Amino acid sequence: MKLTYYGHACFSVKVAGKDLLFDPFIRHNPLASAIDVDSIPADYILVSHGHADHLSEAVEIAKRTGATVISNYEVCEWLGKQGAPKLHHLNHGGSARLDFGRVKYVWAVHSSSLPDGSNGGNPGGFVVETGEGNFYYSGDTALTGDMKLIGETTPLRFAVFPIGDTFTMGVDDAVKAADFVRVNKVVGVHYDTFPPIAINKGEAAQKFKAAGKELVLVKIGGSVEL
Ligand code: NI
Ligand code: MN
Image (cartoon, rainbow, N blue to C red; front, side, top):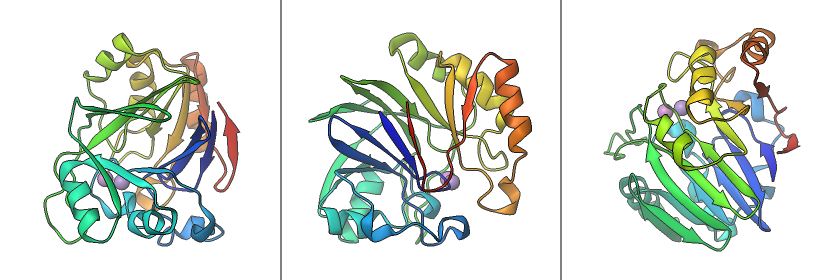
């Protein structure tokens, strides 16, 4: 599976010939000014929760590409009202069987108000199961024991975790989360975008290494095979 990083918590995974784009937030990210939003491909846009730093280009990209937006019920309804043409509503514990595999919406410990202050339901993450392997994107979350349930039920190739602290898990908790879901490879997101979530990348990599794990930090605009 090829993962491309677009900055903050936005990335895409190419699997079974489909482009799965997660949490688009590009035009307002000062670190992602080199990314051309108009050329990002998407067959599905997965939105973890209602915060603006996870969906600011969701409608725009959905309209251009015809991609199906997958999120919780409230976020889907809100994006639909803004013009997203195709929606797949989920709620926690529910899954969608799609042409590339299966997506399950799972719990996250965070908040989820929408940009206009309306109710964005409860925040979540996604477990994606495909014929090419499975992965878990936690969305913005604290470390939570519920992650152990994912590790117990789904063998994962890798996980994508926030590591910037302040609003989400920091590095130490992300290492523990990797243990909980039984992965050795973690793609770090949600760091360095704004001063409160700046991290020491060398130290972060070292902490994962000391736990026998690998922290993958992809350059914005870059791709990695996982
Ligand atoms: Ni958030
Ligand atoms: Mn966020």
